[in-house]
Structures are given as C-alpha cells and as structure tokens.
Image (cartoon, rainbow, N blue to C red):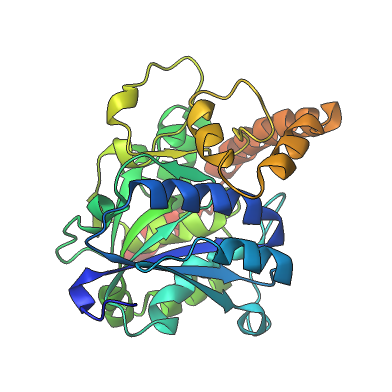
Length: 314
C-alpha cells in the first residue's frame, strides 16, 4: 500500500532505451538493497519504447514502498528536433522534461542507469538545495583531462572545477518551472550546438552559479590509477566507456557484479561481456581519442558560445 504522506515520497527518474534495461535492473537492485524503509520510492522510467517482457521483468522490483512507473516519451520527441551524436540517443534529454511533465513534484532525483548505489539514496535526496536549480557533483572525468578543461572554460564559460556531471542530479523542479528551464534549453538549442556532452553542457550553461555541490562520494567514476576510499563511496557511476559489462578490468566493477548476479538479466549481461569484440574495443578507444580531440578543436574556435555572449555583454 502506498504511503500518501508527501514528505515521505522520493521520486527517482531514469531515462533509458530498450537496450539499457538490463543495466537499469542492476541499478534498481542496488538501490533497493540499501534503501530506507521510512520512505516511499516512486521510480519513473522515462523511455521511448520498452518491450513487454522487459517491462514485466523490471516490475518484479515492486514492493510496498517501492513502485515502478513507465513513461513513454516517444510522442513528445516527435515535436522536438534534438541533436545527438555517436553512442548518444535522445534519451539523454529526457531529464530536461521532468519538471514540466510532473508538476506534482517540487523535488526529484535523476539518475543515469549505469550506476550502482552503495548508500541509502534517501541521503542524496535529502540534500538541501536552498534556491539552487540542482544539486550535483563536479565531474571528475573533466577534471582529469586538459582538453575537457579547456572546452568547459572556453566554450561554455564554466570553470572546469564547477562543471557538473548530469548523470546524478537532485533537481529543484519547482525552481525549474519558475525559471522556465525547458524553454531556456530550447532557445539555447536553437542557437548553439554543444557537441561534446550535449544535455550535460546545456544544463551546465543554464544552471551555472545555481548549483549546490554535493560530495564526490555520490558520483564516483572508476578511473584508472586512482586509489579509492571504498568504505565511504555512496554511488559508483560507470561513465563513458568504463562499463563492467564490456571490460573485466574496470575499477570498482566488483560492486556491479555483486548486484548483477541478483537480477533476472545476469546471464544476459555475462553474454554481453563475453561477446564484446576487438572491434568494439577499438571503437571505444577511438571514441575517447576523438572526443578529446574534438573538445580541444571546439575550445580553439573564435565563435564559441562563451565568446559570443561575452562580446554581447561588453
């Protein structure tokens, strides 16, 4: 039975396509294993089509205080022209729709599906945002790469240590509506194409100086040659090509498999790992090289977004 106390409800949004359902199951498994019994967790799966079998398999995660809701955005997508590239799909933009589609919520979590949660997700939700648009974590992948640092500063006008990762967000939906963030996004999209991390770049530009920064333990990336305080990590985010279902040597992957083994997709995920080909591996390496190269090329241009608005401000 649902608890109707509004203060006890934690809305959690994911955005996936059919191919990402098995990894969503791992994320849900980890959240459920560590969640508090004091809250009602409303899970919303924003999607553009999931097959019936997968929907039923994910529905198995429903409990008295843990509910699964599917939201098909395919029709809404037909009204918009959204820019994507490479391995991205239009699902990356779904987090920008949440505030307007769900006016009943003033606050929500948005989580990417390529995660596992080691802590109680209620702790993340309960961060106080004050008057900020989002609570987020500075992107450690950007901080580790000179090309990305140059891109965020020269193209977006966001200092690299303030550039946040959009895969883990505490969203002030009330403020999103008041500030017409979706309209700001569409206006910006029509004027400038951000090509490195599309949705993330737009959010960083729109939300800059209106961000509550959250400790990095809530968005830890498995980077090579790094020492981790594993006891204190709350959330692991397998960003970019660092997917444990593609590679056996990803740092912190043991936590992914701990939960993957408990899902109905375990054998399917093992099969994906075993069949990841040399061509796939080469393509991943090439994607990373090309992304860094493109970031630097964008940073070196004379008419970046930041340069244009800086000239207008003079």
